[in-house]
Length: 308
Image 1: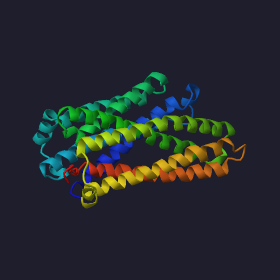
Image 2 (image 1 turned 90 degrees about the horizontal axis):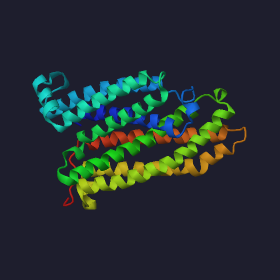
Image 3 (image 1 turned 60 degrees about the horizontal axis):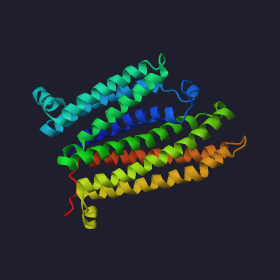
Image 4 (image 1 turned 45 degrees about the vertical axis):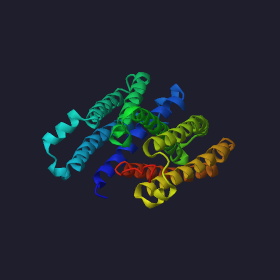
């Protein structure tokens, strides 16, 4: 993989910004106002660290992208070429907007203790904007005309819906992987209520992921011959992504219809239900990280066209 630095940084940036946006959104729709500022799901320090990491990854990602575009190493990027791409291309404009958005997220994270409600919404809005700019570094950013506009809008919705799902996994990992000695009955009840709330929001997110995934594929490839999917690297990775997504849907179904009700019916003995949820979260986390790695790789490859 000649573009390994670009792929690795893109993957890390996807994870960073999606967790930041998703966990912030989770704290707003799954927790009551009085629960948001507690140790149940702390946000200030994680948001600060994720924002700082986002700035670092976005900056280094642009350097890696310029290096790949100009055929130089990371350490030999020409300053004039960097400035030209930043100031005279859609990718550069999107990068500037992303850096500003992540800087605003950093300021919002620092101010969470002083104005929790307002800054939480500001943090979410800036993280959402930062995610939206990532579209211009992928295939949607290169699509022209009205098809390109539809593709970009669809891809933005696709990524934001994925962020909701990924943020929920991250939030529940924090809630459910704390030592049992530190989890009171009240915390278990809150986690169960949050799981039920996330199930409803997650259903909408999955529907949007499926719908926009279809739109993105049709905009990018049309209907390629099945042979082309198996014969090309892009097609093989796309099939792997779809298989992993199907696995996540099965895990989500088990969570919603078996593990979450089991936690609600634990009646003072939550250990078996928590163990099942923890195992599911480990599998979901591993699967989603693999999907994001595949997506980061796909963004560097030429897509299959309908004519094969």
